[in-house]
Amino acid sequence: MNNKTHSVKASEIERKWYIIDAQDKSLGRVATEAARLLKGKHKPTYSTHMDCGDHVIIINTDKVVLTGNKLNNKTYTSFSGYIGGLKEVKAKDMMANRSDKAVTIAVKGMLPKNSLGRAMLTKLRVYKGAEHEQQAQKPEIWNF
Image (cartoon, rainbow, N blue to C red; front, side):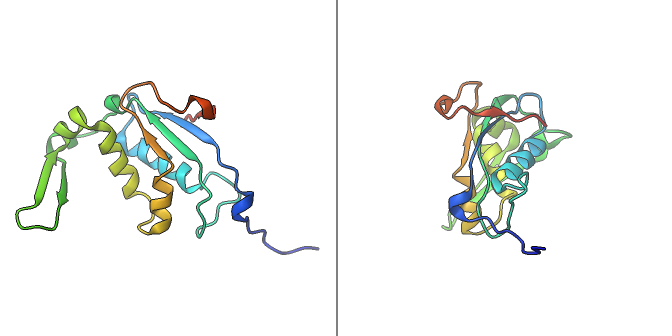
């Protein structure tokens, strides 16, 4: 009887392409599903020390929903490192102008904070509308 645990090698990883339609879905729910696919937690070959996830395309981010009073209360802050370099953008303005960036920030916050997480984030594509440029990869629609 063989009681050894199989560890997948980098050359054995198969990467698929998935589309997540964010229309009328909560921002957090879309971000958690995208992070799960990017990490590869939906695969039986998942391992924490490797990037074994898939490519994710998120479309219709301009139709994503923020629940509660987050649209008025939530702010996105960024700091340049210089004096007076603190910038704050309300969620209402961010969703109106840069909804794709808001989704990217949400997904980035759910990935590991190291080089592995940065590598996972490169496999994410976010689009405001229903069209995307990855038709040649034949992506599958991911329903959740």
